[in-house]
Image (tube, rainbow, N blue to C red; front, top):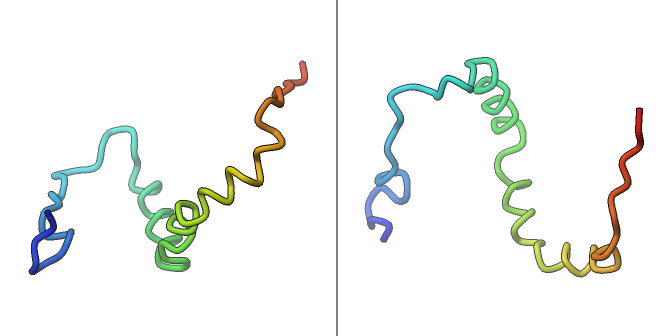
Amino acid sequence: MVPRKGGLTAIQANPPSIPPWVTEADVDIYVENFKRTGYRGGLNRYRNIDRNWQLLAPFSRSKIMVQRC
């Protein structure tokens, strides 16, 4: 359950460091984009998930053809 005071962030642990496969430059890119756009895009993806299934239904049996180089 989410605590009444502090919300969800009150129960999240801050990692002591970033994983070795993530650089500070990677984190900076995410931070700048989040500052600019917020989390609306991520939320809209899930808000629209049923519609996405409907729109992509005609392609459900399609094969992805990869061209040879």
